[in-house]
Amino acid sequence: MLESKYVDVSKLTFETTKKFRKYLKRLIELGGSDVHLKAGSVVRGRVHGEIIPLSSEVITRQEALTLAKELLRTRFDELVENKDIDFTYIYNEQIRFRGNLFFQINGISGVFRVIPTDIKSIDELGLPLTLHKITQIPRGLVLVTGVTGSGKSTTLAALIDEINSTRKEHIITIEDPVEFVHQDKKSIINQRNIGQDAKSFSRALKAALREDPDVILVGEMRDLETIEMALHAAETGHLVFSTLHTLDAKETINRIVSVFPPEEQNRIRMILASVLEAVISQRLVRKKSGGRIAAVELLLKTKRIESIIAEGRDLEITEAIEEGKIYGMQTFDQALLDLYKRGLIDMDTALENATSPSDMKLAIKGIVTSSAQEVQNVNVKLDDGIIDLKEEP
Image 1 (cartoon, helix red, strand yellow):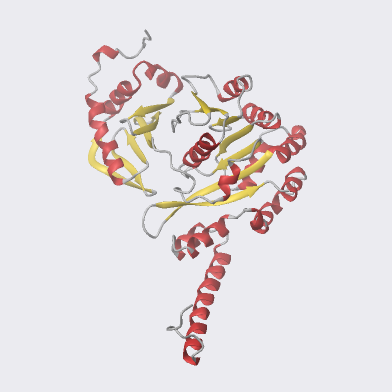
Image 2 (image 1 turned 30 degrees about the horizontal axis):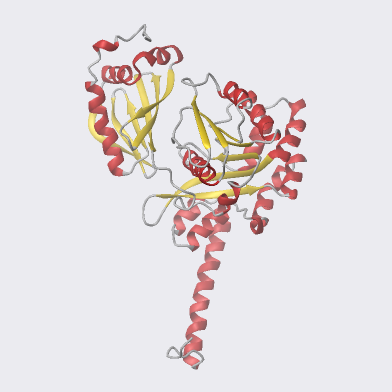
């Protein structure tokens, strides 16, 4: 039996946990994504992108410490030694939380992100239809990028679930922690938790190559060794999915290359150009009807993209994506304009999130002017008697 130097588990009452579960329940009722707990402050939640209080009651320094002991039990030692820790908290059979506890100047703080058990499909999430084609790629590297809280894990879960439903493969996921739990369908899926099932991403990835995988999901490419191993796995015929905290495709490529020493960067560029199949960069934006939807930039592998990456012409990437719409590519601004055309977001949201607000304003003005002209043309035809509404089509 595991023992703790700092916690006597037999003396824990779990009363603080019962109290804390009320905040988790409140967040779920509001449709929020994260609970923020801080010693000496009220508990807050992120609901549709905004931080709001979940109660007026202040969590004391001692309560925060006790909660950490009750949630972690013998793993509390890891928090003391490392000053922060990732873990999974099971709320009920349908809902789990990805937790992170850490020390700060007033005591202990924590962030708990909702992980629904229900895995939504590409279509249910309103993601571009091109993502269906990405799940059919046999080998290579696919990156999902965006800031924290932009829905990267949800998109990855949808991609993996579609592969699981349509292909007979061996899928290995390496995550910190495991978020969405997949059941075997047509594929067999092994999911490994860093800390619990594996020591590190790079070590688990190295081991995965000896475990007959077809598809490997690496939760995050955090360091040089993990990035190099992921590139090697893609190079040797595996389909590798991973994430990066980058804003767009151009920054993603720069980030990967810049991790390596200058003398290695040309070699890495050549490998990346060869294996990179897609970059899915996303931002969550407010919907007119409430809630949020992903605006997605899509880079797909073409001869032109491959040459741009290999030759270090990164400034041309956005233009190449913009002109690659025929292949299913799109920039953020093209994605936002499409959401606006479909009536899912308003003009203010489109302008706030646009890479080039001035160009977006002109594009929207063009749509409005075009729509007005179409209405005018119809009215003219009606006045001239060209269109007979009683006539059968």
